[in-house]
Amino acid sequence: MPGAANIVAMKKIVQQLRFEAGINRVKVSQAAADLQQFCMQNAQQDPLLTGMSSSNNPFRPQKVCSFL
Image (cartoon, rainbow, N blue to C red; front, side, top):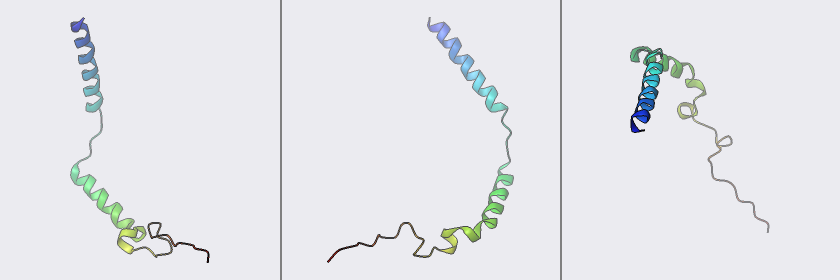
């Protein structure tokens, strides 16, 4: 049965290649322009560019509460 298994595997490969051939492609230059436009539009809300107040920072060290 190695021949039958080989045929099944080849059919799966051909099916995958047909699927990949049908995918619409975008040129790299167009994708880069779209990405740059997206970044420029959302730069005001980006905490890496604008910074974050310490009260809203989820990564700040937690305050320790101790009872005396």
